[in-house]
Image (cartoon, rainbow, N blue to C red; front, side, top):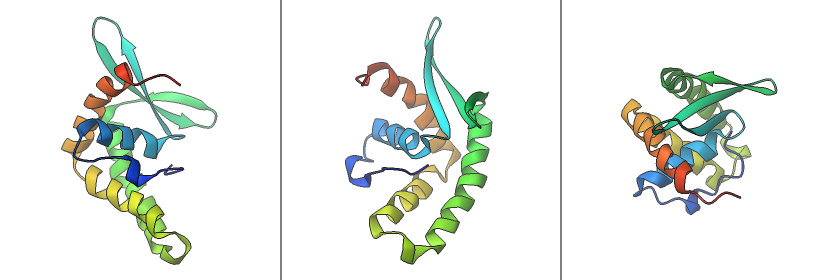
Length: 120
């Protein structure tokens, strides 16, 4: 989590940048995948060991509001060991995703991001 995040590469005035930041910040722990049956939907997976298991949006919200919030508080408490810019990503995550409404919207908008983002 929060690995190789360049906070300056996101423009939080744009919803898709917020979705991208959510995905990038949780990379390695949470995976968002696009599934198209009749309409595109986002499926969320949590990494357990070396496997990814499905998780619900409610579980993701709980994970962010409890597990991630504790992680952020612990990391911010280590202030001298973290650079100013690496603390910015944590503080911005906390500001953006402290609201369930923002998490819901970011996950919903992820559908657009994953549909049209160039594949590497």
